[in-house]
Length: 475
Image 1 (cartoon, rainbow, N blue to C red):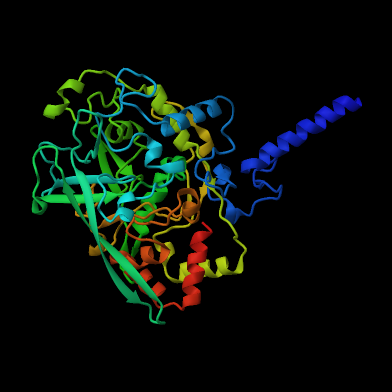
Image 2: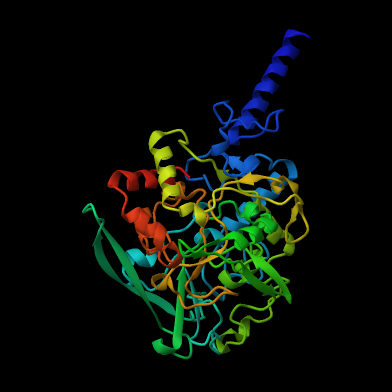
């Protein structure tokens, strides 16, 4: 081998090793995944098997898994642009047009900044603002049916010449409490109100309002690839009467078929709902949702015949982008405080619902236009969720039903990536509507099936509570 050829070969090998280590990928051994420093990853660090990424920056949620190469990479970044780029009101623009005339956000990224949870603006405004960011407002009658002039989601934004369906305002009641050792904490309870109705003003006593801030788009592909037989076994075994816990699956009906729900706050979705998001959140029509979101309203008559504004191919690129995002690795797994916090997590029985380890099924999932993703199959993952519904008590009762989920029942939130939310999105608002301002408040809102864990946490020493929070920040 000549010196020149040898040099080129060494450079090529070095480049290959650098690329392998960038996000973490397998070597010749199926059991070894390298970290960026070239060392083998500890199994406890691998949140999502081969889809684990060793990223701790603001793009920790927004980085492709290492298996996203070639044409998949091209489509990934196409989907990323469609996800992030603002739509515009030009109904004839087939690439970025179609926004509205009613909408909630101007892009997916406007609510899911860096594939995370945008800050709930009204919280900082104390209800004085005219709009809001990063929140969905579900509305219905007290009997669960919808109002004649409105759908399930309040469209609070509109393009020029059209009036938004209504505006959300909020007031907060803050109550201070103490742990047994004297440390203080507070819980903030929101009270929501809708004003500036587009058409029929609805009396508050006739209205149910369920406000939700967006979920982190972490591990979406793995969630869609979950082994449903494993979930069924979990549901059958999730009965701990000594702790008041009994989880159940949400069974939903879409297009005349029944599915096990895994996505969303209420496990109310069986897929990533890309088509629904473009329609309901952005007002962009597709083959599945060819009518404008405000179709039938008198002010919408001029916007009823613009045709399809995003293709199924483009929506599948967004589906692929979401499904192939990497999941941040767990950090500091051998740190003494983290290990103590993990032990406290188990001592507080948090693991009974926030199940640490699950698996994806063996067959490949297919995206909405038929593309197969075998890389998500057969993986050991650590989402810290059983994806079942649990009664969280009257304090978190939204009174809004989703499938089999009552207003007080919520899907166990997956905790993977949660420790990086502040880095990615600049805030620590948790729970379905962001009322919890930090981990402690989120835990202390737990009631119903979460009451025992809340009380076990409350009775811990400050050092033990702090250690448990340190463990959460490592996820």
